[in-house]
Length: 207
Image (cartoon, rainbow, N blue to C red; front, top):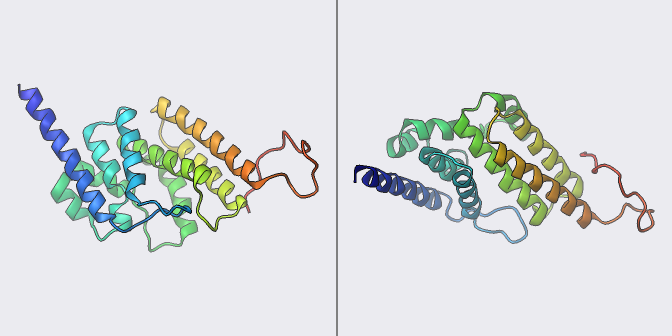
């Protein structure tokens, strides 16, 4: 009976984190042509974390992982509402928006090896969601070179994360391969090549 009550309490906390995140991200959209509501992304990340065995607090952090970075939310509010462990993971997953974008991306690679196990799983699932989106519904103004550059960078970040989460890594690798194929297929053959020529070439180099 006590275990059932505890499980219900944790389910309630996850539901509270979900509701908080959806409200915080209300009105935000993804960068793809469909301009989907942003909470579709955080829902996917949380579902992936749960699927790959993330603990309850890690699932909560997955729902909340972009709230400090992209919303009017700070660490203290996350800590007060959801506890120190969840807040610490969200902070681990937050980029400093005061830095140039290129530096933020560089630091994601540099800081990846030091992530806690929970934050590493959320980061991996976050990158998986974004990689899928780049292949299926990429940002409207991104040329092929930028899409490939993003996929290469995401692969580098995931490779730098601490070991573990092998099933999630395998699915990330499959998503990455599928998205690379989709991006290159959408680009069509290189100018001047007849149909069938150039097959077997490597991916487009990022600019």
